[in-house]
Image 1: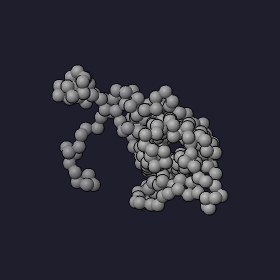
Image 2: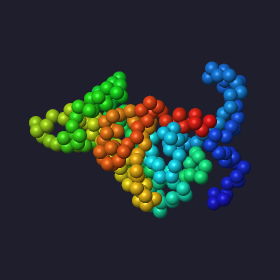
Image 3: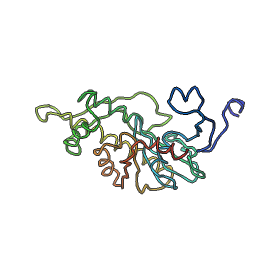
Image 4: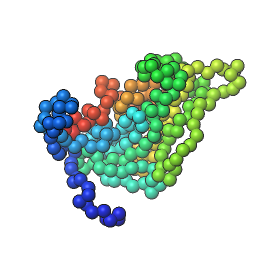
Length: 250
């Protein structure tokens, strides 16, 4: 109404799990499927990620750690932050809402860092194994790749980089330290965003569920547990929690 847009321009609102059509013959031929398979509405990808981790109760919190990293908490009512640090919306199940804070580049930034340090051909698992060789705290090495609490008031470019003690004769910085520092920076950024969610909802987080490609990192999972002083529940068998949640909705 505020934008003077006729509602007829918008698609109808449908509950998660609703059948909205069927796969056409043309698409079925392209995908190697049979035509007529029902197509259902699932929900936003990261909310499906929460569902894929089994989150269905008020107060449960989860982080879908992929290209970016939204941290979300399930609520019984919408919370609108006056400082515009978060998003509020309906959850994929009835009678629940979701409050979201996002740290921005996560998997994308780490993939970039990995490519520079050990090459794009190095697997995520091998890079994580290398990061485990560094001490927690990385002997003072810090990586700043822009991850942190976002706000509609503070959007825009910032500065990032890798910091380490100098002169180098004091300590020769190894790729393992920089890789681990990158993962630890994600853990501290998640804490900052989780603090924002707790401040807005006036609640305390009991446990954090994590899923998505970045959740495969044992270094990141353990750093999160230490930084948050919380139980961290990781989706090990099925890290692609958004796909699982979309299937559950269907």
